[in-house]
Length: 79
Length: 151
Image 1 (cartoon, each protein chain N blue to C red):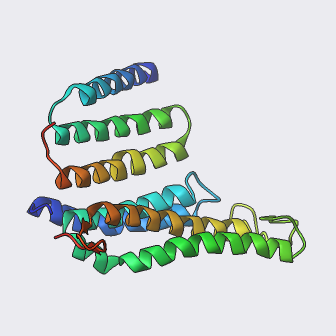
Image 2: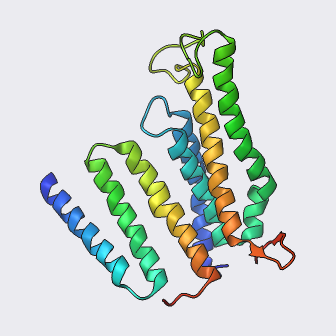
């Protein structure tokens, strides 16, 4: 059961990573990157590192996305 | 910056809970997963969320640029002074039990001597660093060189 969950999470992770690299709209890329961070946080939790999961959920999902959105709001949205 | 009512109301509702959770993670750093860095990042994210969803003035009303800089330096200073107190009490730098800090009862809230004090200082430092980072990105540069607040 946990194996199926882990495999699904890893598949979502790969899809998100490829999507961030390929998508043209920068705001969509930031949102996909945020989803990548959220899945990564759950994977850290599955690997038995809850403190790293906490940092990843706060920094990788929250603050990094907010800083990138701030950068987009200062520049152009299209690539 | 963002003129969306749903984003504003949601972040106004959620921000106090994020801040309480950040303080909880900082204060229970010696008992549960997390600690100064995690809790400080969560607390700083809530301040950045307010400044991003409303505008920079609303964020500056919460914690101004000057205050964030002072807290950032003060966190590092408090960490250093806590380490030096251990030297003054006769131990190594950042020594805890060897320097004679009262350790308390294991598993209780006040149970780790100087570690909780150090964790609080690290949390202050990280939260204000994240806030300062966001303010520096979002502020408008004027031609005279000094920074002016963006709308």
